[in-house]
Length: 221
Image 1 (cartoon, rainbow, N blue to C red):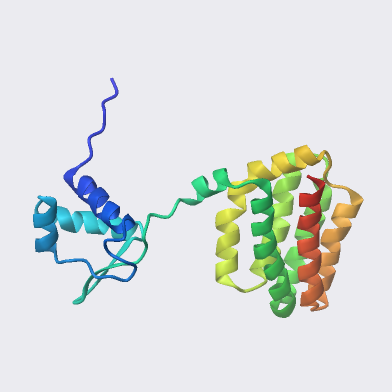
Image 2: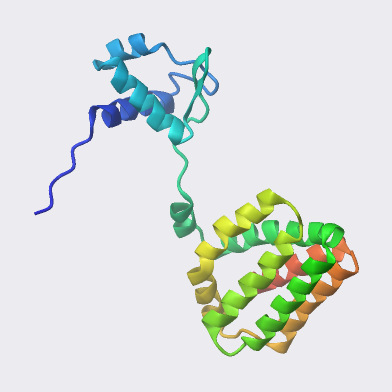
């Protein structure tokens, strides 16, 4: 039989501290009172306070600085990616892809290596070979775009792509299903044009083509 989960004292203490931070009792960058003071205020032991602080530090709200104390680094707990993406509408999704992939294409044109060009060409060929099945086509498309972002040599952009785009696989499949078409010659040609711009080191064209492709998808929806 399932049981109702009771919060531990540390979880309750973390919730009380978070409530005080949300109410701006402590502003961003403020130093919290010492453990002894907080323990008295919350009616718990110092070990419970330490555990509560560790919990909020792990969630990005607090930061412990050796020899200095505990400081407020955020005024609330950030939503996790999955929750953010579930809330996002199609326009927001495409805008985010424009930002990541557009800039990735521009940087790839400046920084790509011969090995990365070969990888992009293989991915483009695979994308061409997977035009008949919607899910396989989306997967091949993601591989192609990831090759481009990887060639940007920007670890943050690649990290955003790896964190963001694979989680949107189902949403992208739904988008194309709503659109009613995928894998056309014109669509494949646009991707080939992006690669051509990267090969000839035309970052401006690579970025513009990448963004225009995604924006046309949004407009069609």
